[in-house]
Structure formats: C-alpha cells, structure tokens
Image 1: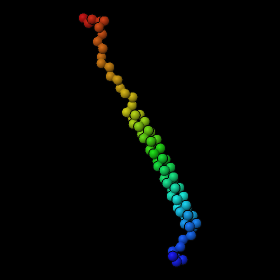
Image 2: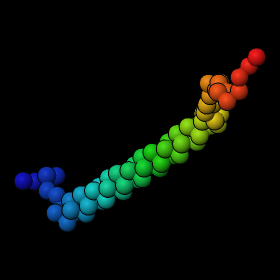
Image 3: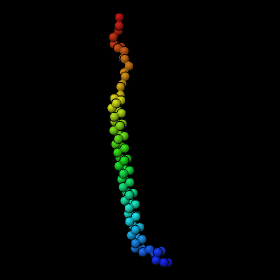
Image 4: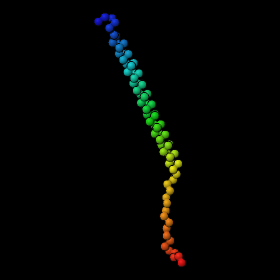
Length: 74
C-alpha cells in the first residue's frame, strides 16, 4: 500500500460522521416539512368543507299538507 492509498481512520470516521449528521438533519427537516404540509392540507380541507356547507345552507324539511279532520266543509 503506497501513500496515495492510505486513509487516516480518524479522518475517515470524522467525514463519515459529518455525512451521517448532514443526512440525518436533512431527513428530519423533510419529515417536519411533510408534517407541516399535511397539517396545512387538513386545515384547508376543513375550511373548504365548512364553506361548502355554508353555501348549501341549512337542510330544508318539507312537510306534506295536513288535512284538518276536525272541520267539515259544507
């Protein structure tokens, strides 16, 4: 093994740890972003559903006309 092929193990471990830390941090940030987007989506969905319900208005109940059995018509 010549000098060009030798790697200091301490340097290798340090670089490895830096890369793992960077990737872990990136992964954590991406997970947080995903959770934020999911939360925002759910809030927006709820608001749109409420708007839709408001536009439709209250449900209309139609009663059939009742016959007045107590009165006789001449």
